[in-house]
Image (tube, each protein chain N blue to C red):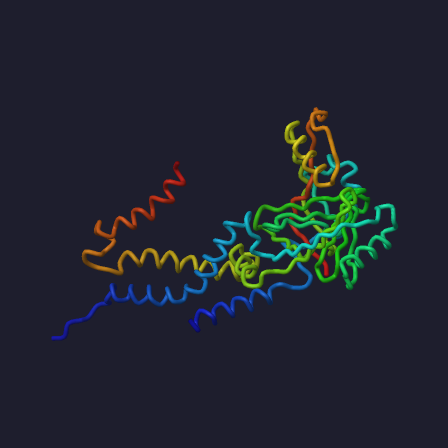
Length: 154
Length: 188
């Protein structure tokens, strides 16, 4: 029993030590190519499959797997999702409110009409708004960044 | 004339199985416990304890941000610096505090929720190891551990002689069953 406790104690000590105050994930972020989130979201199709760096306050983090985080735009009511494959990077929930930089490729997710209705209905419900889902007759696209490097600043 | 004694493979196998087994106890518990927790991640957040306090508000979103912040901090008796604020929509406002708390205000429902997140100490560390968030050195160590598990499973086939040997059907059916279960999930 003493052996088991000793092994567990050593492992917990190592992992606590590994977690630094400023968190970095993946490769180093490319600060010189930073663009405003509002610029990207103004014409997102121009940036699809291109590498960019964005910066913003973390305003949301995936609660279950830490597989995405939302960065607030410099413009009001806008945000951009930074999404990784489960386990590639795990963003801590405690990072909400901190500044982050993310370098990665802009990805377009095309939704068909049905998916668009579901997405907009869910969004409206969350924001306390009402929409007529049947009035939506065309699909839409969502844009997010698939990061190669993320830095969460202190 | 003395007879040259060879290596007793049966005994060596048992001793290695025993000692490596002892070494693997700690890590096996870590992976097994976090494995169960991660399997049920949709039902229970094993990384964080999320505490929520809900209050009704009387003020409107027309107020300046500073005044809204002050009203909220008084309502929830919060006495800590604000790290950042964010308007998600004209009706949804968020305030982030230095100590990790978040206030979400919905002006449509005139409701505010204070959410405080605390990491679950043991589970979070176990999950961190399980999902290999530490990377680098941990990859080498977990590869060695995986190698040990392969050794433990194969050496188990040569631990017992006689009628309880896995090579006889009396206990061998357990080996077959252990292989069949994943096979069924893969091929059906």
